[in-house]
Structures are given as C-alpha cells and as structure tokens.
Amino acid sequence: MDPVDLFVIGGGVNGTGIARDAAGRGLSVTLAEMNDLASATSSASTKLFHGGLRYLEYYEFRLVREALIERETLLRAMPHISWPMRFVLPLHRGMRPAWLIRLGLFIYDHLGGRKILPGTRSLNLSRDTAGRALKPQYKRAFEYSDCWVEDSRLVVLNARDAEARGAQILTRARVLSARREADLWHIEVARNGATETHMARVLVNAGGPWVSEIITGTLGINSTEGVRLVRGSHIVTHRLFDHDRCYFFQGADGRIIFAIPYETDFTLIGTTDKDHHGKPGEVICTPEEQDYLCAFASDYFARPVTRDDIVWTYSGVRPLYDDGAKSATAATRDYVLSLDPNPGAPLLSVFGGKITTHRRLAEHALEKLTPFFPQTKPAWTAGVALPGGDFPVTGFAALLADLARDYPFLTPFHARRLARAYGTEARVILGSATEPAHLGRDFGATLTEVELHWLMRMEYARSAADVVWRRSKLGLRLSADQITALDDWMKKQEI
Image (cartoon, rainbow, N blue to C red):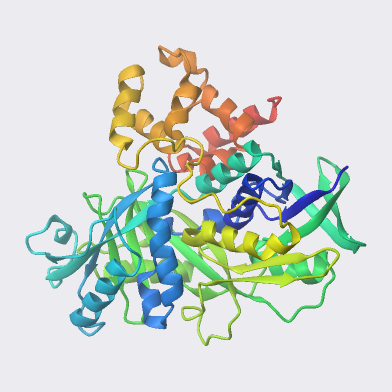
C-alpha cells in the first residue's frame, strides 16, 4: 500500500474538516474513525453555529470574532442543514444588568462584520408572542441572531466532500498503533475483522476526547499536553412554546442554557458544564443534570418543566484544552494545534475547538503543515458548498416549494425533512418516483427504502442508530420495534 500524505485519526467535525481541506488542496488523505462518523462529541452539541456570546465575559475576543465571521461563511456553504435563528434573552433581576447585556450584544453584532443576519432589538414581553410562554415577571428581553446547524449531518457531508476530492474514508476502523520508521508513519488499523497497515508522511490526531489517550497509548509518546473533559448534557421535551424563536436563559450560578424549537414537535434544552472523570465513550445525561435543566428552565417558563416532559436525553464530552481554569465553565473553548515537527514524520494533534470554527481550524492545521507540503494549493473552502447545499442562502423556501410541486405525493413533513437533510440531492434520492410505492418499504416516520439505500451507499450508514440518531433524528418518532426491524433489514443489505 503506497503512503499517503496525511492519515487522520478521528471522524468528528475536526477530522473530517481537515480531511476535506487537505484533499481539496491536492494531498492524498486517509481518515480512520473507530465507530460511525460523528458518533461522539460531534453529534452531541447544542447544534448551533454561534459566536459564543457568553465567551465575551472571559475576554475570548479572538475566538468570538472568528466564530462570528464563520457563521455567515458556513451559512452560505450549507443552507440546507443550517439556517438563521433569533434568540430571546429575557432580562432577569439580580443577574447581569440590562446595560451590560446590551453592551455585550452591541459588540456581538459588530465584532464579526455581520452582513446576512439581522441585529439586536429590544422586546416588550407583555406584547410580544415570545412572552406568552414565560412567567409574567419577565417584562423585557433582547433578541439577537445566531444559527442552527445539523451537527452530525455536517460531519457526514464533510466526509463525503473529502471522498469526492480523493480522500479515503474508513469507518469502524480502529487505529491500534502507529510508529515512526524513517520518514513515514506505519499505522496498524483493525477493520472488517482484519488488520491493515497504512503508511503516511504526516499523522493528524483529531481524536477529540481521545486525543491524549492516542498520544500516550496508541502512539507511545510522552506529552505534558492534555484535555479537560467537560460533559455537556441536553434534554428533549415535547414542544413547550408555539413560535420558532429560541430562548437564552441566565442562571443564578452564572451558567446559561438554551431552549430551542427542535424537530418540529419538540424543544431542546441544554447544556450543562460538568467536569467528566469517566471514560470518554461512557457518558450519559445523569438524573442530577436532568433535574438541573428542568429547574433552570422552570425558573423562566410559566408551566414548570418536569422529568415527565422529557422524551429523550443525550450527552457528549467536550475535549477542551486544559488551560488550568478553575471551573469547567471558564475553561477555554479555543482550539490548540500542537505540532511535533519530527523531521521525518510529523504529528499534528488537535486539542479543543468548537463546531462553529471547524473550517478555520482545518485551514490553520494545513497552514502548520505547509512546510512539509510546499507545493499544495492555497486555502479554498470558504463559501464552497457542501453536498446538497448548492443553492442561495435565501433559497430554501423556493427549493422546498419546487420539491413539493414535483413530488406531490410527499406529505409536507416528508418534503421538508428531505429538503432540510439533503438539499438539492433530495431529487436524486427520489428520482422518478410518482407515488409512495415507488419509494419502497416504509419503515415509519417517512423513512423509506430508497432513502436507506442512499444513506448506506453514499453516507456510510451501517446500523439503525447511524440512521435514526445521526443521519436524522427519526428515533424520536420511531418505536423500539420499528428501529429493531430497520436494523435487521440493514444487516441483510449488500453495499
């Protein structure tokens, strides 16, 4: 097997983003993910492209500015899986004063050169519909802009685009070891019941929560750099309000949470910030965190939120760079790229980062590696559409209307779901279908056989969990028996 330029460990947003950028510059790339793409942190976010308003309190101006600029860059590249949202921040007596919040929002509006998104405005909650779901004591609020993103779909689309540009994407491929021999890395990978040996000129460690474990264990290198594992947990409830705006709530403990319209019929509430001392892959939303989020939201909503309202929970571990901060909340969300510039076989390790800045992180990673590949092409990803995103940033309504017109047998929910997930590629999936029967077996909740063939052939899906929790969130609508039947069907398919 011939050596590649880059071998990337980790199929999260940073790993796939680096693979995509590198492949587009003409480098040969192999990426190995031990599970499914986005199976850890990158599918467990709050699903926002945002600058991080609260990070201004920690003077993270560079990070916030970069993230604010990226919001609109990313919106243009993926208008199917990302879209603008308005956030309502009620003023709470005894917490941050109105003047301080308004100053922060002024900086937030102007720090990143905003062009697409509308700016901040004041709300009278006794007159605005956003006040109906809140307790009457909340009289005023500010409303500002940030963006939603389908986080796990972003990862898959990055991987698909990387593969289209020549990268090899290996899922369910565990890196057992990697060692330097002369000027190459020799990497042992367990895949499909066998062990393969890959060779690469540069190794990129984008293992997320496992980044330190990979350095010391898989690679056998001594290092003083490490990650601080911070658990972020979320709850999903039945829909708590009847408008399409989000809420930004302040807590007495200095934390903030969001309450976001989710998957049409639900509300997403999160996140927590707790140091995680267990294994990265063993993380749940604990009963204590569920109670915390319910109580936090109940301080604002007129109708209390209880555990009986919860229909699903999820939790992920953020691999923050260990900067010695006293609390998990204060730990930096900025990323650190550590280059071990061995003249023979360099190693680049990725610490921290956030989903909003994944593209810039990838650019910076390639900048660090330029001395080893001086003939590579320049940065190219800004504004370049991901698969299915080749339509105007304001063109989703027209895309949906055209899809519904040309496939009139689709229900409004089904048409919107396909348009949001696949953008212009929804037509490729539907093909020449003129009636529901042409879509093959119906597995429930609008999931059909033709879509599953697409997901298995084009999007690396191999199990029901890949489909109903990462490629979509149809697990909220399917029964356990339906998911089992789906899993059984997928196991029998040949790809």
